[in-house]
Length: 284
Image 1: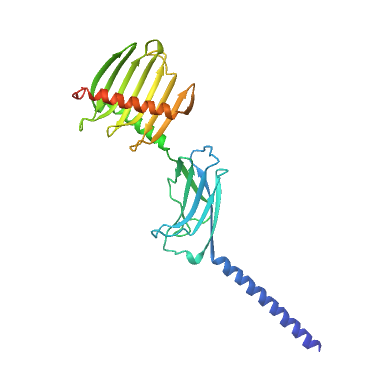
Image 2: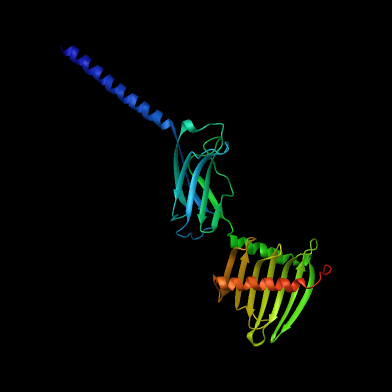
């Protein structure tokens, strides 16, 4: 009886050990079926994000066109930067021959952010953990418009120039008109206005395809004085107001729709006056 009992005990122990080994093997197999991808997203130049900032992080197969993301995460609002992400992906969905990347889109109002450097993961020696992604801020539509406007200002020497002048009661206007050498179309007018006791103003009008594009007005107490106020307005080719701001006392605020409409009207009036002058040869 003792011998039988001892044999039963040993068999029971082997059975328990076998079950444990089987369970452990199943866990390892399950773990092998998943790939974990972790990392952080940061800004190249730290900046304060608004409560409306939204970030979308996706794991994509870059080797296949129009492939659905293998994993995706949306963070809204983005409360802090850097921010972390973690994806668990079934290994069966991974093709070792393909290239996988992390794609991040961050939108904060009118500002978007892009990835200057791609972030490959998982295959071909790419990492799966500690992936570091840096985002760069793109210019807003207003910033791009002003940047293009300033580039035009820098290149005015390459255009044909004519001069104009007009006298009104207590107001004197003088301007330079800049025309394209190829088409003869007006692209820029720079006006100086002497308002007498009311001060002085410098106005730059930029045009695209015969339409007002950007207007910048500097208000001064006198011709040589520093600008006390700067008004800016800009429109796209559909006539939609894109840029509208007012700078005074070191602070920038939104230019009213009425003031922007007045600048658009002034730009049309100046365009009509400038067109009365015949094109001149390029200034030497």
